[in-house]
Length: 206
Ligand SMILES: Nc1ncnc2c1ncn2[C@@H]1O[C@H](COP(=O)(O)OP(=O)(O)OP(=O)(O)O)[C@@H](O)[C@H]1O
Image (cartoon, helix red, strand yellow):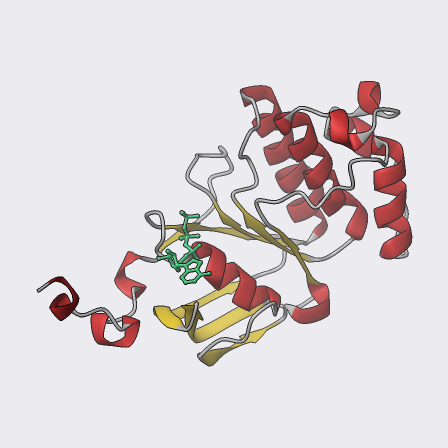
């Protein structure tokens, strides 16, 4: 298993550069937290690392087919039950569905519930359970704990630490809360793209 390498990456959103000069390396079994204020570009950076949008410049190694990306949206089909949803993902990724997933994400009592009837936090737990099914080595997680209660946050943190990282996986998370994982952090604030690159001009307000 190899490192995830991000080298001198510059990314844009809506055609406007938002971050530049972002570099880091994450070894198997390690995680990294992306920090920075709302709008700095955490989502944009994760999407570029995941290969969902091209970077302006720089390079990413060790993601591609190894990477699984989870955004704010859970991408769940309302008519499928929890069990059908997990089975669908397992089929899609030609992966096994570990029975323990129901415990890891506290979904056992919800197995037969149509996903459309789940609460926001329950739906989020189902969305996160996908990460345990798809078997990707590099998890790129955008605000994974939104809508989760404290117990669910602890369960999710335990999954990342005891399952994913313990098995040599890599995790890069954008999060505003402390997951208690004591992961190294990178502050993106100094990497904000220069105002001229962002296209901003005070003249707009004159
Ligand atoms: N479709 C879009 N078109 C133009 N600009 C956009 C678009 N979507 C987002 N932006 C802008 O791009 C910048 C980066 O957004 P991004 O979502 O990556 O930030 P973030 O750090 O993830 O924010 P948050 O912490 O609020 O989730 C923001 O200033 C945002 O307003």
